[in-house]
Image (tube, rainbow, N blue to C red; front, side, top):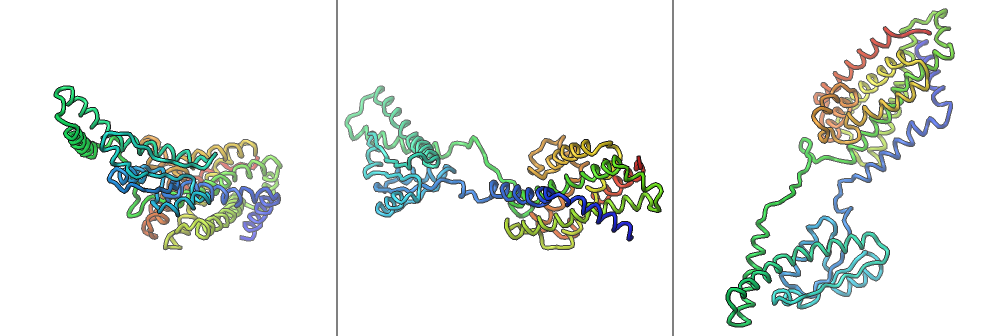
Length: 397
């Protein structure tokens, strides 16, 4: 046991002999977790542009215009009294101010043109987004009016109206029929939400889990570089004449890498809870089991890779490339459901897939120890298999 601890401590000291190790150990994982978690936040309203509206008309058509703006998904429209709205726009609290003038609805229903006034903050991309949203909303409100005008024109070509009042009545009736028909038109695009268990998909939790898996997995694959470096420097040859057995050296190397990984995982979980407000589950034992089995499977894979690779540079490059690819296919960056069936089948043979599945079971579904037994068992199987290959293939030179 003393030899195993000595080897583990030696590898830890070597790993942190350079301050740059901290960059990959905690700084970059924290930065990426924060950026991705913030970028894909579930708060849909945070992506909307605020638009203040002054409705001086109060008609059915002005209300329809405001409804179109709210349903656009681009702007969050708020109707305010004229004085308050103008004051907020003057203070640059909002990027755009829309004024619907009195008589807006009456002019349109009488077949005449009507205008709205949009004031925008100069050189503001949010204001331009509001401008486009207003144009689309106006076009949507104007669509039944255009149909009404064309209907009246066609009717008048067949038989002239007896009076202007009759023409106006026909126009209003045509507009009402067009509005009813358009409201019943089938949707061309249907939006659905990905639901996991009883909870909606949580992008912040996905970022926290995915970045932990990615940044822990790659350094553990880097165990292969440790073996290649020891072999190149002749350290392993000296073990031939020492009383240390092959299994002792391997256990020491694994213990050192595993200890570093456990500390890193604990720090990232704490960061996720304290800063990202991610609920890492209600079962600490279940979380510990899935993290430990994931770490064992990853470091064992690094040991197995180290027995096939000759130089540390090859090991480092392969660890990064393979780690990134396995993290992506395993669902650490994007939900597994969006991948094609073939990729999902291949991913079942990767330890990252089972790690993400087990962690998501705890973080997104509120699972317990019983719910992660299958992922934990598969990860343990990976660890046994890779460690057996590493022990069998291990050479001192």
